[in-house]
Length: 170
Length: 270
Image (tube, rainbow over all chains, first blue to last red; front, side):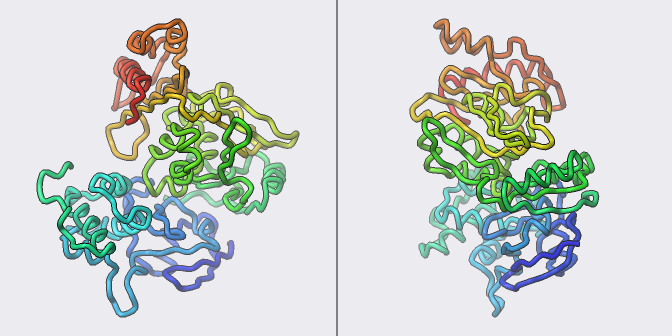
């Protein structure tokens, strides 16, 4: 067993873990944070995406011991103490950016990382920025709309002006 | 999927990493970003007894100019290579290639040294290092050696890197305005190249056309003799024996090599 100390959603944690414990299982099983999902389990689908020091990573391909001394954020950690959702989460709700919801926590974390890197992405940049996240329901259109709307909201301009309504490339 | 059990050691310097490698021998594997190794461990294709984490060794990370070369530390992550202003100005093909690896999450974790040490013949960075005529710096018990990309890859997932050695840095020539092109043909997002072609000056390297990344030797010779891009690109698949899978058979891969080489030599990136 190896001792790890890290910050998860702003809370300092200290645990003894097996070195082979994956970060996704540490979050879900040890800490009971169930937003991040295990989807493909092969670094492809992005359902397990969380932020490590603010950058999106696939937590099925990170060992918990690799997160030692680092900071992890899950979708639970984006919600303010009073229950207010983040701009990205709110935009997914307002733009119907989900159907079954399985990919959504990963999409939200990937989008959060994307907008931190590039606050004013074009539609193409959003599509490429979400390349590591699969959705099997929506066909991505509403997800892309959600991220563009969140970008507009975060930059203070009026939403929807640049949001595509038809002819969106799949 | 859960990896088999292993002991976890954290190296705090390159010297410490080498000492740990010497101590644990062939049972040990180095861990940086883990984006080639951990997927193999999860399906038990790799079951090292010891993982030596080198991601916390600061001397192994970073990008700097040394004379007429740019030196990139082995644990520098793809996202940093892709976003480096220095590389975009001095070696733009390498920054571009790093941005084609996997997807954003993978680029936040995967490292340049890890990708080269993994020696996947279909990967972006081995092909690019070969096109650039770059080299890798390897530190072992008997000191430091620099191995040219042409001599580094010896087979599928196999390089000349020994089990007691550490790939410490990647060296690439400062090119500035050298013309380049980069082509990666994929069917799915975040996939490996069905065929890839990277052109840098008169050098052309191919991915997924054999057991290692390859130079398109006949194309390079033709260019040297004054052939047109179109004529030279027609020779790109000469001497290659690519594999086949459900994406592409041998003939189709050789066709792709010719088409992609032409586009790369025309300076196209895509």
